Amino acid sequence: MSLLSFYDKSVTYSNTPVTSSSTSLGNDSYASKSFNIDSSKVALIVYQVCNDNGATFYNGGMQNAINVDGTDRAISWDTPYDTNYPCRNTVFWLGTLAAGSHTITGRFASMAGGSTVTISSRTLLVYLFNGDEFTYVDSATLDTVTGTTFANDDPAVATFTPSGSCKMLVLYNASNSGATQGAYGKRTLIRVGASDYSQAEKSPVTDDYPCSVFTAWAQSLNAVSTTVQGRHSGNYAGQVSTINRRQLGVLLLDNTTELDTITSDTQVSVASSSLSNDTQALITKTTTVTSELLVFAMGTKRESTLSTEYGEAYAIQINGSDRRYSRGSPGTNYRSSSASVVWAETIAIASNNTIRGRFCRNGGSASGVIDSRRIFALWFIPPGPSPKDGFVDHANPGIL
Image 1 (cartoon, rainbow, N blue to C red):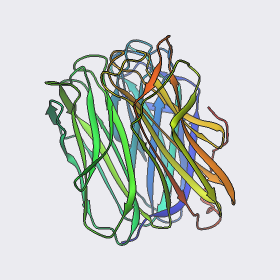
Image 2 (tube, one colour):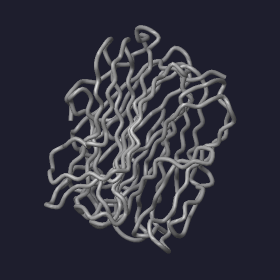
Image 3 (cartoon, one colour):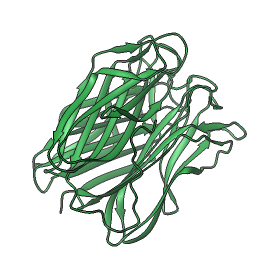
Image 4 (cartoon, one colour):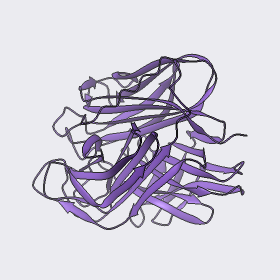
């Protein structure tokens, strides 16, 4: 057993729109990466997509997946408030890639034939690690909960003992493809041992339509037996939460990895469609060596919070430059919504750094609201110059 350490990365991103009117998954032509590696590596692959407000979009939603060397993985579904309103998905795959050539492609489809969906913005992250200590679940076993009391998503569980003290990163995405799902949506969280973390939530367009919820957690961990469990509930009394597919990933990272976190449940609002600082989401850090930075951010508006029906966007800013964003919309202006975003880049030696969460409304005149946010910044010390394996880092500042 060996804890995970940074090997290499690729970040592919684009704001060029693509459309589909098919119910069969097709390639997102701006989200593909081919590369070669000379020995087996653990790969974390994240595909994060959204459409901008006003882009052609079927109110019955879209599905997304990651194609790994010809096989579709990590399928997820979501819907917007209504036709041409923002919709989003964040899907991820975690596994071992053998030595040789590989192709990773983001995929998408409409939920109804002849009805068009648009991807306005996407990020495809491929992060490679040395080591072998991880767990990944991608299960299509049905799990339902009625009411607002959290219960285990039974397939989403991992029990393990790290080989040593480490940093643990947990990713959890849960979605339904349709019935039976209450219009108030679902809530999810991550349980570590007996403690619950990172509640997020999302509502569909109406009863029996898709909604997905992505959330994350990170912490230091000792070499003791640990159980990580995904959990969910309905978002209103008597409402059903259904999960048709979920992904749970646990990465046990070498203890030299540095971790900074934001875990705040203080409400903020903004009456603007331009990104503004989330005053509850600021990380400052001085690095003394060249580092590889990996950031996950998630902002949630809770059930019964009144805000714009156009929903909110959430974004990551690094050292004054906005990197990437995601945007979604709730079932109504008082139902829940959330958006998550990922980013990675190289941070130069001996630098003072700021990481901010940013947000805005997606349209309309009502304010955009964030009730809760989680940001996890992981700082890896690279082993040396990147191997000559065809991997290219596409990260550039100011690319929103």
